[in-house]
Image (cartoon, rainbow, N blue to C red; front, side, top):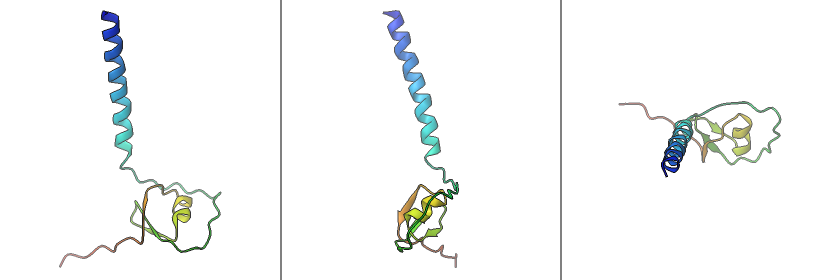
Length: 80
């Protein structure tokens, strides 16, 4: 019975460690250019996590952006 408790406790600790590492990477915005993508010229803009507008999702992914939202990026409004 004692071994079962130790096993369960160890499994929980390892699970928490693995999950915390993944959740810390969720906020990351990376740009890793992929030259192997051929994209169409259809304009369906997406806003990348780097706040840059791309012509479509294929173009964003070709630039290494995997997190984006549909539509153009909103321009930052200056403080007045």
